[in-house]
Structures are given as structure tokens and as C-alpha cells.
Length: 347
Image: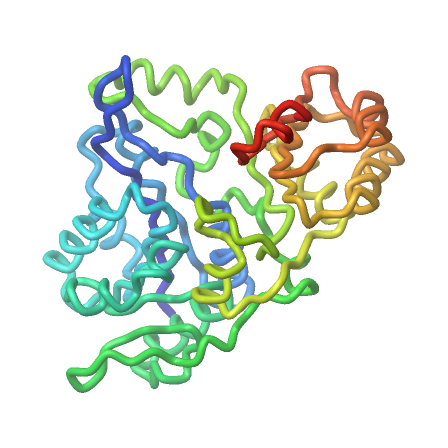
């Protein structure tokens, strides 16, 4: 049985004043760990490689060497944030030029939304997984391993007989499955000990600075997904309700239980992350947030937390409890997302 391989590719040339050229989106989508863990637990070991991290550790790093060592027949590349689209496609082209028999599949929000254009324009991409990826990735590994039938892989766009097909998007993560996802199986990532030191950017031509950041682990955040889905249709957001329906067949939202959030937070802090980031949208009820606080309180665990509220104001009771429960360095972020002066003044 051959291993699966998941790649995160940053945007390699991004202009950021005053640093000029930087490597952008070096922080990989946390869902990659959940996907790799689910496949590994079901008999198909999957490793994750962050190409941005590897380039910092070794400026001459070549992904081809890892592909040879893993003897893999299938590679998944995350195209979640659109900024890295060019570099993702260039990476796929390079891999295909070296390993023509490797099946390359893309996934993530951007890949899911533009699946048809990707499949039509880029022959280096053999497939796209739309929406949730845990079960589709596992099933794809099974079928590629035995040269089986790709039409049975849920959520998969693929090529066959000169045609592009899209299988039914039937796998949608439900709340029970969501609470079983392993977001803190960090050892599945190559050179995982450096994960807490990764920022969103690495500095081009400054290897010594990048390595110092990785080693010293300044204030680094672990972004833990509180929910999947949304009930709002914010025009600026790639994860809005209408987009979720288009790319993942999802209506509404699901959330992690307070107990699950506590356990993930505990593991991430022990691993070395200094701050844990929770994001709450307007559809999350106050009772749920207070239950989260109570879970931490009863376990006498006071991590450094960042609670971010989108289009919602925290209530007085929450504010008083937040101060008591968490470390004094914890923060509350308010994202207004409105031009209405009345609401901006309220914030």
C-alpha cells in the first residue's frame, strides 16, 4: 500500500511593504490535518508537507525528492486561498513533468469554486475535490491504489474517456463527524516541530531571520475551526452561505462541542502554540459561547485565547466571564464589516 501526500503551497512572490518580496500564506489550512488523520486511521497513511516551511529549512529543497521517498501514486494540493493559485498550478506542472503517472488532485475553497476552469485549462491536474475532503480523499486513495472506478469517489471532478465528469457531491460533514475530526495530529506534518513558529509570511532572501522566527516561536496562533458553514451572505467572504451551498452542498452550519474545543486547545497549547484563535460569526448564540467558557473554567485551564467576533457584539456576561477564565494576555477582536455609522459607533 502506498502513502498519500498532501501539499500546502504558499504564494512565493508577494509584495508586502516595507519588506518587499515575501512568501505569503505560509500558514496552511488546518483542514489538511483532519483529512490526513482520517485517511491514516483508515489504513492509508498520509503525510503533509508545507512547501513554504521546507524552503525556509533548506533553500535547495525539491519536492521531487519527497515524492520519490514516499512512493506515492496520489498527491493532493490545497488551493484554499486564491493568492496561491499560480504557485499551486506551477507546482502541479512541475510534479507532472517529473512523475507523469502520479494522480494530482486539488481541493479547498478556491479549487472547489473554480473546479471546471481548472479541469478544462490545466492538464497537469487530474481531479478536484469539491467541498469537504475527508471521505473523498480516503476513497480516492482506495480507487487509485487498485486502479479502480473514480466515479464512486464522492465530490470528485475528474477526467475519463476525454470527458470531464463531476460525481455527486454527497459527502457533507455532519456535526457528529465534525466533532471526531483530528485537528491536532501535528506529527502528520513533515518537520512538525516548527509548526508553532510559522507566521503567515516568510521573508525572501532572509533565511537567518526566518529560521530565528521558527526557533523562537513568537506569539503564534493556532486557528481552531469552531464551525463549518454559515447562515450569512457577506459579499466579501468566500465561506458565505451561498458559496457553501455552491461548493459543498451545505446549508446552515455545524459547530464543535465545548468539550471538543477544550481538548483541541489543550493539545495545541501543549504542543507549543502561544495563542488559540476562535472565530464566532453572528449566528453563534451567547449560550454556546458561555458553555465554552464554562468548559475551560471547570477544568481550571487558562490558556491565552483570541476570541474574534464577526458582525456580532459580545454580551456583558461574556465579557465578565472571559476576563476570569482566560490568561490576562487573551484578547477579544471585533470585526464590524459595515459602513453604517450607527453600528460602527456602537462597536
